[in-house]
Amino acid sequence: MIGSFGLVQVLGELEPPVERPPRLSPRERETLTLLAAGYSTAQMAQRMGISKETVRNHVKGVLRGLGARSRVEAVAKGRTVGLIQ
Image (cartoon, rainbow, N blue to C red; front, top):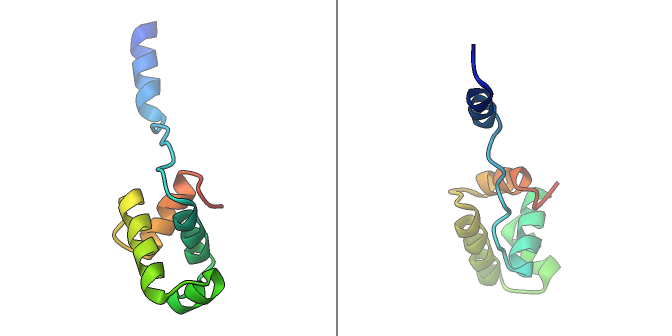
């Protein structure tokens, strides 16, 4: 039989820790949203009115901010922390 303090500890281990959304700049958030929508680098550049190199820099910032190694992983982590739906 588990005492009440032990039960609280067990229940705490069952619930995943709540992750706070990382701080991304407004442009990085926009980039993440467009990544989730399937936009290519060129399409994002045209949509955002910036160069492809600047888009790549924003993507790097998103990856760094989310601790992701790929665009797909960034989208998945962005959904997990509630930055995108």
